[in-house]
Image 1 (cartoon, one colour):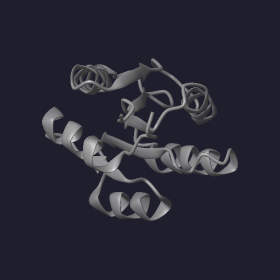
Image 2 (cartoon, helix red, strand yellow):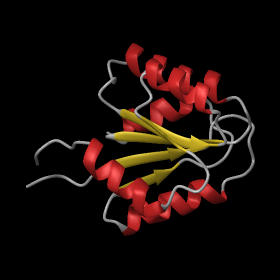
Image 3 (tube, helix red, strand yellow):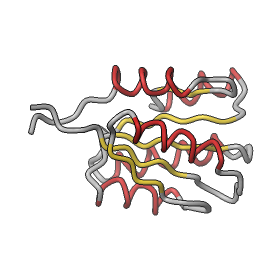
Length: 134
């Protein structure tokens, strides 16, 4: 039996706009995934610690502040330092196309831009995040 996908949804940095993160968290939950929403103003260290403590399969980051290059990079680096590179990192926000290419090169699996549907996010997570067999 396949275990349910566990996703940590997080708002790193000083960005105070979390409506989109909450919509995505609820959509993933309603699709049968286990979701932990960390709340606003999380540091990359707090997010990675939560993911490890919760045995997450993925981290979904929402960044609207313009600090996406720094914040995504740091989360990926911390996961590597903690031997948790198997945790899939994806996210969304207002992120320029050139930055998306660079983020993917850093190890971010997917970036969703404004207008992405919750259905497309759910479909992508199901197709790209694996869980251990229970």
